[in-house]
Image (tube, rainbow, N blue to C red; front, side, top):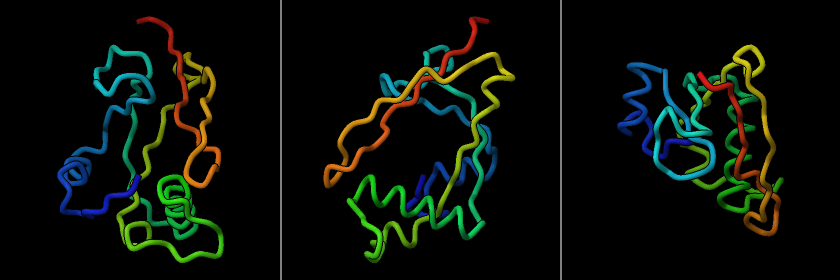
Amino acid sequence: MLSGGGDRADWIRNLRGDPSAQLRLGGPRELRADLPGTVAVTARFVFDPAEDLLARRLLAKKYEGWREGEQLSSWAATSLVVAFDLPDLHAAGGHVTGTNESPGPQGNACVNTIGFEFPAR
């Protein structure tokens, strides 16, 4: 994810205090741990130059139609990059159920939803 507000954004300040978070993948925007697709994640601020550039390019491509050889927008070039590390799905007894690809900007395919299944607790 990119934070255009950098360290000023409330969600960034919260993650700096506690990197544990719940991430909702697909489905309704409501965030509750009991809903399918809600996964416990750990936030990580990206400092590796290669990972940083990859994240910026992927998000710029998806949301702004960026193409190789073009200059990144101010948002894509200067925002704070945050990664969310997923748990080891297999160790947790879960598995990926599939992806849902749809046309993004400029007709590029974008993965919008990744499904996860975990055994009932």
